Length: 446
Image (cartoon, rainbow, N blue to C red; front, side, top):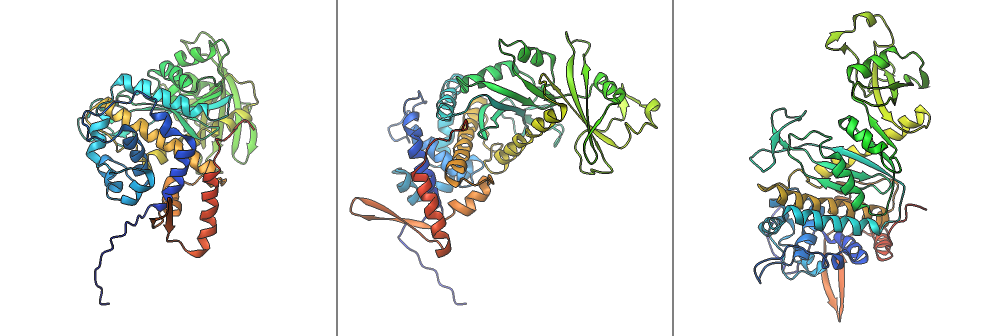
């Protein structure tokens, strides 16, 4: 092949499918709302506007950026600038300089307002709240990076953030960055109060959390509210919990290799006993079963139970709850919490949440809260525009919907977006275009 090189003056973008997101942003009026916030201002007359930096930050993430240097993905895409109304696109250092202006007070005031505004548009109540924590490994001396619990890379410095998800609408309601040596339950009550503030006027119907939140102070707080908060929290396998499940004999078979029971358990420092639902799965029947093998009690082998089939060959899971539903329903409800793990995985792999870190703690937290809003907007797009039962990940949408070559032309006062798309896909994309034009905020109460 005798291949020659030539250039075009026409500004062609590989991301013309983002025109759907442009329509979503316009319909939600989120840019107009951002102008009402006390965003940090730039010191130079030549600086980019805060609104452009935030919106371009979202666009770059949707295009695949997962660290500050990758924000250059949109810098030289003139058609993206024309589509979103930006005269000039910012480079990655402009974002770093801008996020450096955020203080702890700015993060609280600004992002609380954004979450409140966003969730006030969505119709839902009596919702399911999933709380979780995760680990962001760090490879430098970033502020707040410390050695703590890190199962994938023991001894490595990390941050240990807290996250709150609203299961009903598959969106994130709160995010706090924390030092890497924080325990999962640290600042739980303050975090929960801040989350409820973000969801102003809406009530928690059910709170779910993993075993990192199995703590007497947390349980007391949930139960002592004027209207007690109903919860299901994974129990830690403390010796007393192990002994309770070992002694338990009455099991209900709910499926092949799966049995459920329940006990009343009171730890030494608890003022009252609480309901513990126990699930055991037979490894022979369910080799991929999750849960914990019970081998030791107080550091010693369970010698008196060595021949007891109740212990051998099973994996156990335990949940503490104040619900009065049947044990099987408790387990079914708690299993839904696994979707929060999927969202954290997508935040890390597709939205690059672990990659946007700087030397300053609150600068990093500001950037990551912007990532969370990019996630919520994409979740809104999936539900309101795509509308399929399968919730495609951003990576899938990036190559299925957004990665479309195109360019802009003008016809009088009208701008025309011309897309290079196979004939058989045009009707499908036109349908998405119409959906985005007819956007309305979802109602999850109906």
